[in-house]
Amino acid sequence: MSLFKRIKNIVRSNLNCKNQNCSSDFIYENGCSFENTYSEPDEITSQNEDPVTQKEKEYFANLEVSYGADFEEIKASYKRLLKKYHPDKFYGDEKKLQTAQEVVKKLNIAYNYFEEKYNK
Figure: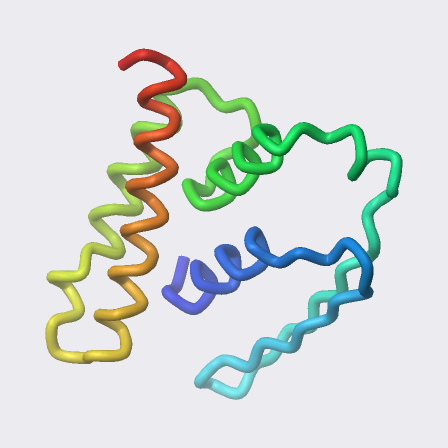
């Protein structure tokens, strides 16, 4: 998965589209574009959904695993993504370095949450 797709996933997981119809166009360096339209969530689901569940969904999305994955799958994905987006790989390009630092920070927060949850 490219760095741009990873950023797109993080942005999508952090978007808050409760009261609006969000649409976003992503255009990649090679000229390819992709359009993604978000529809409004059901108000019943939004009201009944626990904030912890929303936070967990965001963490699962950041770690690129399916919702409800076990700790071993989370750990494997964390290690794979950390190797792929480690800031030391992007020391020559300041913009990519900052993006990689943000990605790794979100990965660490999500992984630490699941470590505490599963008492590992």
